[in-house]
Length: 404
Image (cartoon, rainbow, N blue to C red; front, side):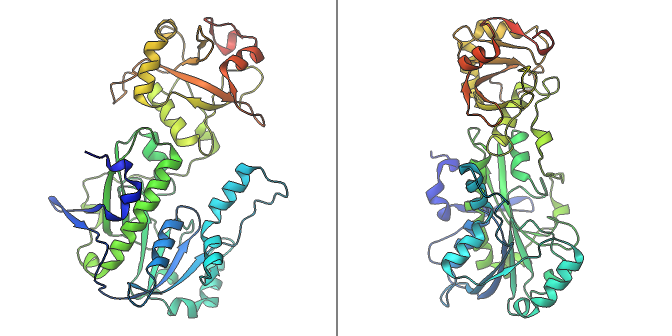
């Protein structure tokens, strides 16, 4: 049986699951759908997560499909303020400006969002764009990054809907994907819900699709998967919007406890070896390696900002490493968290974590992590052998920062 997590090209044909009452109701999104009605859509989006949804709306913008007209609200182009940019910086800017660039390429009418999301600027924006708002009857929000004022929400005859990559009411807020990975979730969802006033992500649920979270996925993998899944779920929801509104679910009726997925900052990406288990650190790597990076203090006297470039983070691979480096792993059992040893073959940096007895997978319960390469600030990644030479360390010797 094929794993749902491996079916990227087939996402438009997946069954969509919507929870309800005491059971579940499945609806298949077919290739040829009867059009129930047409909508004049004003799309609010910004980045590469928004882009698949915008593309699907654009592809379905014609008299024979459900989108009669389409215009876009997005921030002005963001260039990062640098004259000379690295490839990584250019890639970040392309992702951040994905919606704007797509609109320019396909000549989709665009409207600049306010430079700052203040009440005064939004009040002026509504006044300047009142004709645009009155010419559209449905607002669609996907990774927009602004809290919309009531006047904007009230402008649309059919309201506003939002694509959110979590099993709402779980992980409301700015960083649901980070929290999904950090907490080692094995299942998650994409939700289409009504945009609510005053408070984000508390509107009625219109559509929701569950999926399994592949434990090999890093942040960008999960982001790409949910952006495509969300785009197709959005189209399915719009196609049957009136019925879905009639059958919408108030979040207070959910059995899930509401939670907030707060934005992740650099300080969250530093490992506290006394508080984090091996399971925690491996999930931190998955969540942060594609962005903030995973910072590992106490491994060097020359820098407190070392990043993990590569490590054994998949439970099965971690378990194999525990066997392969059994002697070194056992050597670390009675050591203080933050202690580390270089493997006898010089290829692996093995660091002691907090006791790992709460690993929910039952794999790799050794309280260590296996790091294969590191990166110092403004420098290229280095393997562990190069790290040994740089820090003048010996293989098989247990080190702790206070003793270096």
